Length: 116
Length: 419
Ligand SMILES: Cc1cc2nc3c(=O)[nH]c(=O)nc-3n(C[C@H](O)[C@H](O)[C@H](O)COP(=O)(O)OP(=O)(O)OC[C@H]3O[C@@H](n4cnc5c(N)ncnc54)[C@H](O)[C@@H]3O)c2cc1C
Ligand code: SF4
Image 1: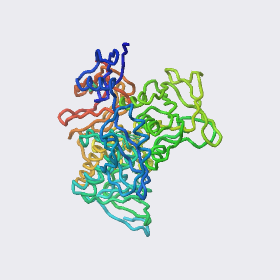
Image 2: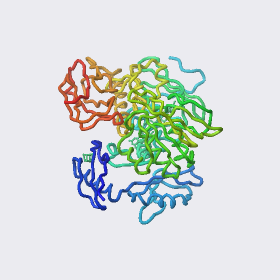
Image 3: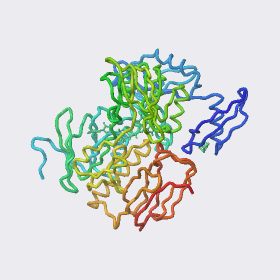
């Protein structure tokens, strides 16, 4: 089945309108980009989109009730609900510093972005 | 000169009001320039709104890498501490007094009581305030479950409490979209994002969030009414025509929470009290290219100057204000042989600064009124032309002008037109 995806490139502020033509999971054509970075991003976006995930985790005895964390690298979009369920099971104890790795999930480091 | 009786007073070259990115960058720069500086913030931590903005997207220009809000804030805070900048948190400014050009008095409360600070210059970086539901004409039952985006964000990303299970968001600006993602990630159902205008208010990278989570975006719609007993139960949405008039077409969405994200307004009440002139287009002060307001020696930066979508420019403005304060204190004022007025031409909603000295390079920050494609940004008086593939009200444009280009110009009209 042939499908056309349309979106605004977010790699840089130019925000080109990109169209990607896909048939049976294979990219046939990319249109509208004005640089190779945009093309690469658009192809990834339709084949295996990835996102950085951020959340807060409860922390005992901290200055604030939570610390914030992010994945050290973007994770496949379809894996996000599973990752969130895993993160929801975590409870931490202060002191925790910014930059600490609190745990790993399938090889992806979970990094503290706000300590407590 | 009189202070306040029975109030302990301190004395500095410059007082910075607000410890967000604008204030921290200003205080760091002021210290580096050799000024005796004090930074004050009412929160019990530094960083302003950044510690609650836990998503990545900060600092690509300023630090050359993409950070989350708390990470950006902690980098600045670390530098501030390393440089030995004096600061006080839990210090709420009550009033600014302008006795004379080089004599300002700032009154603040702190856990140890009321204090006054004498300073020769003030840098005002107190951020913005959020507009509330009643300011956009939403009527209905008095119920719980109505939050501004900032309130919901603090609740969720500082205190770890999800504000509701079924959420309607009003406003498709960056803040609304970013909150939509956070709610959805944490397992709430975001039932809709409702936007008055006929185009989304946020950056493209944030509009993409809605597609990621399958959240419906209603452009050209508005929420007019909230119903419920004790807690929000449903909200009424009406469709708007091209001229932003209600069409009579309406529907209800069931939800337990309404999050209002309809924009920020520079928090300038304390500046108005000392007679600072305000630009109705930005909601912030009228300034010259040192970011000095109409009251000599009072400088402004960040969201108190104009609403910024990028923290990088906020920090840059903080530094500019500090350089201004330095010049002001050294020369007893910001001088120019002749001020060049910057005027708004076609499709320009706002532009800052308002006056240029023509004696230094300057950044203009501007926003367009409506989205356009394949346009030119022009300043006819100096023959400046810049091709832009797309312009959107959501994306602030920053334009560098060199001293040679603007020296001697009578006025400058900025316009965005089709070539
Ligand atoms: C939800 C959200 C998401 C954002 N996402 C991004 C993004 O992805 N990338 C990006 O670059 N930018 C982003 N921004 C924009 C950026 O965060 C802001 O432009 C920036 O934080 C503004 O900084 P500021 O220092 O002007 O104000 P603020 O950060 O608001 O700081 C103002 C400070 O002044 C203090 N203050 C106010 N009044 C007083 C008083 N009377 N006495 C003492 N202290 C006072 C306050 O406590 C506060 O700490 C986002 C903003 C929001 C709201
Ligand atoms: S295609 Fe290239 S130029 Fe266009 S927005 Fe993407 S990265 Fe920028």
